Length: 543
Image (cartoon, rainbow, N blue to C red; front, side, top):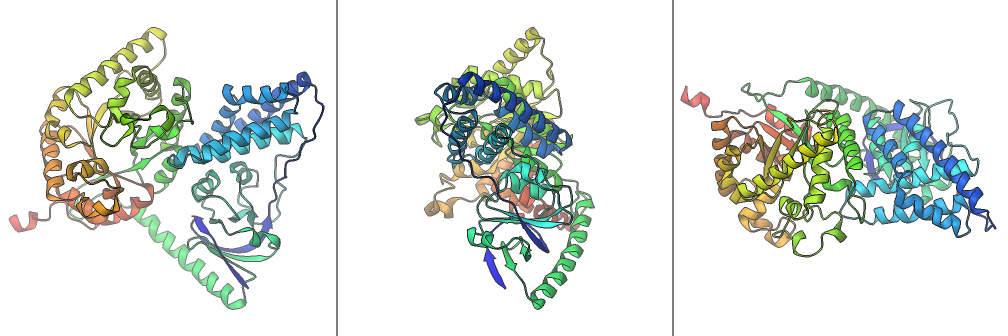
């Protein structure tokens, strides 16, 4: 019996037999090769790969659809495919060129440490290019059929690995490498498959066919467990099944405080993957979609690519509303090479300030958003708005985009709602001006609002004492916003890390807020806290 430690990727506890999955190690001959023939083979292989990916997308849930459609889209990316064709014309084979360029693109995305969305896409590029290479080299793309459920073990799992195994045949997954935020991990969570990553290569050396207890919640596994360990695991599995039943009851409870006041729980997300996770955790929509996370390194996505991204997010939300924050470069630090200098600093030209300085880029995003809003309940908010002049300038561009889409004959939602993200005290102090100028909704962003109110960088440990998201000053600003919004019947949502803390959430509830947007992992914790809290704690005393 031996215990291996890893990192939890998808919680759960299972007992079963291991089946090791080995990916082919790529080796390529040196030629010579006929470029015309290799280019022809490449085109055919890409076409076949895209057909296979589209077929997977048709069978998939909204989350997996977005993954496979992105892989298919990358095989159409002119920049990447032109590089592949250049390498072929230089004399190497189509498979070697695909491997070389795909690896470079994947490494580029993996190194975007401040952009988790694009880091996830790194493995997607490897997965898509591997599929093309397997077609070029006549290797199978479907995993061997299984006659009983197993725990899959591998160096690293690709998204299509999980989709290539018959449904219900995967008890759990264990990988030597990988990330808990990888797309394979996200699919595992969506499919309720327990999994851990980063157990190390020693585990893989002799695990095939042996029995394992996989405790993915605590990030470890036991190879060849003894009778006592097996008995304990079986008892724990029964207990977890009872707890799951209790959690389902929490899901089914109405979103009402202890004294019967309804509330709304939304999620802060960065793409279709965690939107799906949020929906499964009981979110009634997306209160904050950070649009900057979709950006490819070195370039802004064009209108069609952005439109696809927003539509994927709407599909994952399954009919629930999605609120998109327009680009906030500097805060998210995405596409860093396009936003160097003062404009990307915390007190520089962030958010709407930066967007207004780059109108063509802003128009591209607004057109994509207006088009996507015709496909589902999507609304748009502007971040880092300071004064009503910012709002008016942004809405002038929105009207320009509406007219452009009319002239192009492209369907879009004429009545898309636009709002302001209140992240600067100046905006809170003049919130009536935004309402008077047609603002449809308000979102209080506690992360930035707290640090700007208290002059305390939330990432600076030495200033932590001053970073107080429920301070008297913050409560005064929030109360001002709520009074103005209530007088004009404008909806208000509050979001940010602080809202995920049940103690803060209760205080925000008492200030009049009824719409809360938190990270997916905090949804049930916050719901439980709100269910146990009175919205009007002093009502009984007044009676």
